[in-house]
Image (cartoon, rainbow over all chains, first blue to last red; front, side):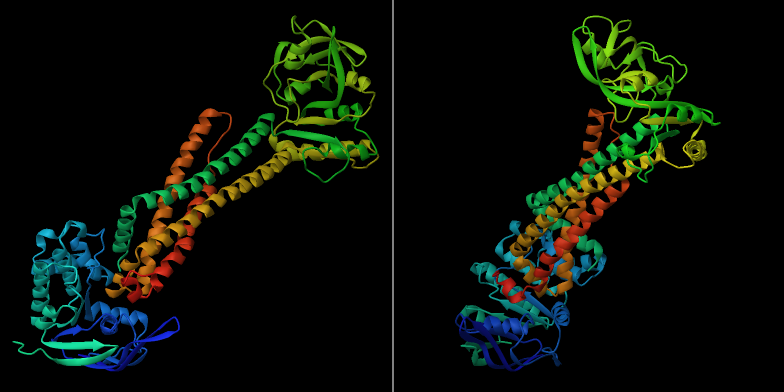
Length: 229
Length: 403
């Protein structure tokens, strides 16, 4: 459960105060599939960063699973990110010198898990994303769609409750993009909250709830018309 | 994060940035090798000099006129101020002390030495037959001064090999005669090139009987008396006996200085240890430079990998883990560089040892340990700033790839 109340995020850019988030209130229940749309500079990426605990609100409250996060220190935030939140980026952000397997393993390495447990879990997640035969390739030996699926595997490996995807199909062709969305949706069907920031109306149309932002405010928040599930 | 994973991740990124890593490795290796080679040169010089002194015999006492506390190498500088000279009679008295094996009184000066039309100014040493044994001299041709009474004035001399070849370029020196000052001497021998006499060049020396030297230089006093005690253990006892004998002869006044070879050796040891330390200090500058280079390159690495740092933070890495990751890279590099430097340094030592067999090169253990410790420390110290800079990066900014 994600609850934002009266959240502001201001940046000082030169003389100008930019209100990237301006009094945002938002509640997302467990297992929802939400898309966030809006023009560039509307604050959608900032909203995603705040939800992902990479950024802190200037003022306002953010409760994750009922727990106030604005009072946590950096280490505590890092721990929450590690266990609760999975990130997927437009540019994949795989570590280029590590193999797909090692990239997927990375969050578990950071968490200090034992190698045997890590191997089993990484194999499992890679298999779920049909990447078993690509496990020991480095990112530069993988296609864009495969890279993004490796990134999804990495985001999933710690069993998070929330998956945050920032333009996950932005760098992919149509077919690969559809594959990646299908992978994300099947994870959502398994009970994970999925929040996708996108420019693409087609992508947004697949979500169950659409949010539109403009100038740091939420201007539209409604279930997708005719959504099946 | 587990230590094994930390090392794996750090070495992985070092291997991927081969050129960068190699450069830092070389810099650190040069620094460590410099410390190893320079300190072994200093240490080698110290051991060489010590060896020379020990070859002279550590059972040697040197009696100088004049009382002074110094244990330096040339206390003779103070000799001018002494009220009473050391004389041949003093030397003779010393010979009566039990346990004293040999005595070589010395008169030293410089005089023109000529043969036929050739002439040159040469250091002249007046001494006795025992000088040969006390200084471990060797004879090339002929023989050394004959034994006899101290005050027996004989017109014979022994030439250093270089003096002999310069004065007698065409003919045999032994049997000829030379003029030293205004007196004629028969050459009875030429010194060989081996033998040791710190402070003199044995090849450019003329040795004559001590009383003859006293006459040439018109002096009663001795420059010094070399005393050889029977064995090393007797040194302290002999030293006391020498002091007391002279004191009794000099109206109960202790107006001579007795230096033991050990004291001279200790002085040289101190000098060369200081030299080694100085060299080590100079060499550690290159270590510091290597450290600064590591810092520089690590800073570049951090800015190249900003996005990666952002990713690690998004994946839940704590600031401390990111610091540890970059610090481990710096330490791995400096350790590897240090080990490589040790290998290079030892190889250089072997080469130097081949080229100059007389010089006992070999890095002292403390220098090896110090170089490694400094190398690792500079990895830590100079790696810390870049690592902390990485850890402090704002994840949002870092992920966007902005700096």
